[in-house]
Length: 198
Image (cartoon, rainbow, N blue to C red; front, side, top):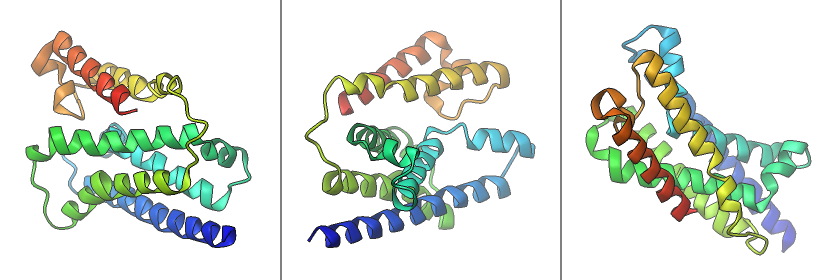
């Protein structure tokens, strides 16, 4: 029974990791062929999206758990609180996109497929993995505070780079349009929403 469960877990990790990397690489290809700024700036902008960074995190996590579970990174990503944090991050991507951003554009063709993979399928697959395979007994509420480090650092990095370049990956970060007070309120609301989700 345990061997069957391990095999099922490996298959699940394999499929999700493959889809995850396919989605990220495909999005990178699409942003390159549709770029409106020089190549170096396009690459920087690609890695400026919370969606992209978090999907890379999920794909990397699942790949390590599949191929190197006994390594130091494997031991780290195997910890229930770390897997729960990763799941919370990608779930936040799904919820924020579908509530705040989906109505802002209408992707078509291959872009539509990639968009759904990044914002819907990978988050759902991650939540199902967490529900089925991750032990819950050792999880504690206090862990959620440390999970805020990633989104808070991300928000600060976006604001700093935006001040230097004028580019903001999401409209609710656009200081040139809303000003710092409104943007910081938006950021605070998102952080609070993530904490409640966690």
